[in-house]
Image (cartoon, rainbow over all chains, first blue to last red; front, side, top):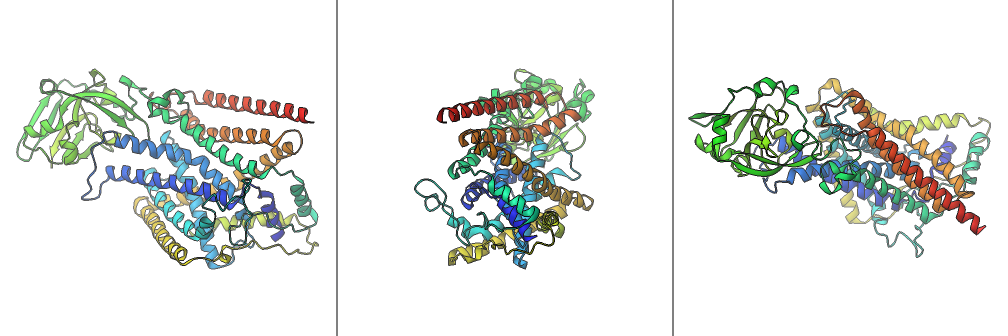
Length: 412
Length: 188
């Protein structure tokens, strides 16, 4: 069996599989996961804030960029993760598989890191396409796996730290011709193991492996890095056009297209899905605004008669797509002032049933002059799928919190 | 959870058993050169402290992750998560890795004879790009087959776009092979 493992390691050995390559790809991967973690935490807590949390309302594109980066980096990490795993594949066939309890824990933590990373990127990508083939909650699992990945990554970096330090700089990793230096004992375990001279099938397999031509060392490593970079560039270029206008013409694989939908804006939940088609077209619709000790009711005509403000704000979805739009309507600040509730937190209620039918608008957003009860979108009365007769629009907030089909604003 | 932790080691053992079964029992065991372990390198004091901190903080964060599953995901769904984690390892180590190994072998054989190594490298790189774009298009195609939530979701013909991407990959492959053969013929 040990010779079988040795054969596997020899078969997987390649000049490109070197601790320096693992370090170069590994630090990119770690940086990418860290960016996804930070942008993910921001998106998570702006939806479910802990007591006392306050979020900036400027720049207005903050959430748009943050969530766009979250999804774009997560997508680009797919080839980087696969390349990193390819680089260290021979380590799967260490013999004996486990030597000590410490070794068992280390391999266990790596199994957890690899499995969690693969699942995290896969379900994150599928979620952007609104395909959910897994038997568990997406949001909670994606969040928990993120913590697990960062934790297992810290353990992994800790365990490998001497190897990482050894191969961190290019100087000290390559010779004058750009060839990687040979790996000494304890400097990373990826070099080709000694030949074992086995007989029988294993021996025949070994001879075939050893007879296979080897590509030049420098070219082999560059091919891996260039292929990984090209694949990451290709997936980014063909998807970020769903949020980044200059790259919109290259968008070929994203789940959304820029400005594609009713009134030039994509939709997630339609009026039919929310069960509000009839209510949204009801001529007797009024918006109730409640303060601490008085309230007011505004029919649509009354809202139109109030001072109108025009703003340009993006709809930015947690799924990563975003589109800028022009909105016109009444400032939430002005409406709350009518009932003497300026500067308070506002409970925003919708006619829609289910998730996000009631959202909280923190004081800093309720006071912001860009936060509107919008009646018009891109120069027309709101489309019913965009929340007619009136919807909330605020800067630097995720799309799920831009409540559609408004029923009431209540000060808290 | 323990099952997931030891899965990698267990999988390696399974592969080893399968391969070991192919070896005739009569062949005496030959000593294998041991893979050196990292412990042999001299480790400075700062590195030792950093390692301890990273491992401790990491273990804590892994605990947070498990705690979040326990708190946020119904217990009935935990086996599903474990199954997906284990499935990801099996899919990668037992399907993708061997496929890449075999594909790489075939390409290397070409590199030894008919083609210069530069041409092989170009072919390898564009095949990787095509493969990753296929992984990207797969959920789009699946979601489209099930049906988009509304007309503003999944607006493209992803199958046609993927076919176009592979046509480009094919063009580059043909170009690299032709250029490589011409160069080899000239130098011969």
